[in-house]
Amino acid sequence: MATEFPHAKHNMTALAPSKNVQKQRKPNPKIDERQNVYWDLRGRYQEEYDKRLDALPQYGEGATKACEIFRAATKLYYDFWNNGMVNNTSGAVNFLVVAGVFHSQKDQDFAVIHPYTIGSRIYLNEMGLRSTMERML
Image (tube, helix red, strand yellow):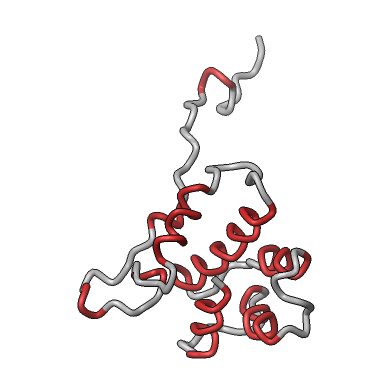
């Protein structure tokens, strides 16, 4: 008699691909207190940002390099606003270096963001990181 494993195909329920988690952001519910940032739906190029976010595939590679650059940047942005930069997002920031968004690891914006992506700094509401994240997008 064969052993029945709980992960056998007939015991698994297929899950629909997750929606873009970044579209599930939670802006400040007090509309009059919202800031002029993408998280609060008031970014400088909010309409363009939302269009690009909607165009990201739910999984797999994006159609263009620009799509992947946007995905990496929004991954950092989402972790900043949703999690206070506690996750290891170094892959995203390193991809932005390779893609040429940050000219090198000596780039000023890279130098601000990178320590948070590897856990060597804890976000304590520094305005420098907040403004760098907005500028990056």
